[in-house]
Image (cartoon, rainbow, N blue to C red; front, side, top):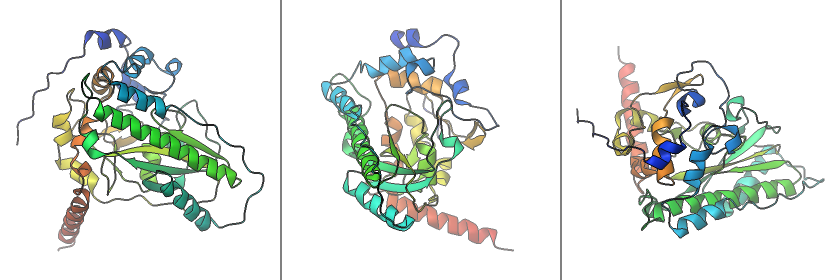
Length: 333
């Protein structure tokens, strides 16, 4: 077995001073809990709702970002107004509404579209979602820009790329929400990077956009982890997607590229119990200091084998063959 790389990162004085004394983000997130509960407000929620407000501000200040990156994140937070819900609506089937919504979303900056019902574990504690359905949208990064993460005073292209896609999430989710509202249905957009009522990865998985990766982010069968997400909740009738299981979870079991590349050693090689589910989990207390000190990270997304252009299709085929071989072996007497 290859020897694990030694990790040398230590948080700097500013991060250490900003960390709330005696508080663990892992405890807040429910690491080790075998019973279900809703997620608590976390790092990107308003600072009055969690103990990491000072650290959040340190990350938001972009202490190592170029002006390009600062401008991209400012654009990501420029939320337009929602239009009133049209009191009249056409009579269409769920399949027809889904086709129209998909067509609109893909023509207005989204790369991926899926839909599912709103479930309790999507909703953050202290928030409510009062419509039954959610559309999930995916947005692919420019890989050549993303792989330049993390940021530095001289080069902010990687982090600027993250901000650029968050801005696209904002525009696209608000456009779709306003289009749905113009058709006579309620709709509410949920783009990043600021968090709100809706967790994004769980509904994205249920809406068929991908599987959870070892690095804690979604892996899509086409774009890998090279993605950002946004959601739009609505009462528009929709046809729902099934989960897309194509083998990335199995692949992660035997891959350690993101583990080895993570400077603070926040990615583990085993799944853990988190709020009643056994899944991949990234150590908050190790990840967030590095994230805050660099005003962002995304190294794990950039190095993920599934993210490299042209690789995902081959990996899907490889994993399908492996599953078929395993299934054949299990069927032998």
